[in-house]
Image 1 (cartoon, rainbow, N blue to C red):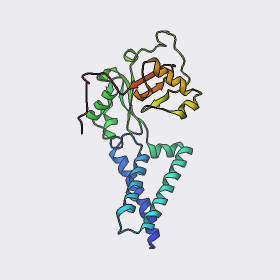
Image 2: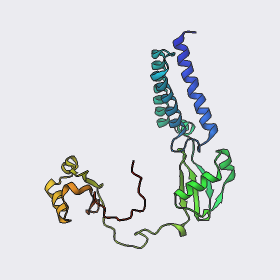
Image 3: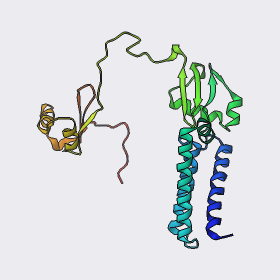
Length: 239
């Protein structure tokens, strides 16, 4: 068999080997990534690593393998975009692990998903009592989404019928490291003189400002190099 054909077949075989391993190991192993993202990242990284330092392998073979794998990833992404069944096959489905305060052990076992990891992810969502959870879902990228029962959800202004000031734009960074960010000033139809006047209102010089941002509500937040905190709660040791 020609060597070029061997490279093409081995790359295809490597892809499906990784895909099978990722499906077998479950979502906990690939947290923050879908199965497809996991395979693409691992394989492309391995090919490039070998291209960089493995002198026993011919560079043009590795380049061919990399190009083929890139095309495989592109084709699968395109097919998944057009076909729901393909998207389900390569990305997987979300899995419910808690329903109405009850842990669904069978679903967790199928994913090789441990109670310790579930509790960790719940704490990251500020949930310390499973009885508060209406639904908890492991998404296709391994992250946990939590919907609390109505009586445990945070109250928002809409619940209290309070007036809300509309916000129609993102915060704008005005100053970074003592320098005005002129590109942001121009894009948002602001003036550098206005920024300087906002700084002077607080009795400061521009060189004293480490960071300043115009919030969506129109307020200007300014942080200075001098924090005037005598005993910081946490301080990194000097190198």
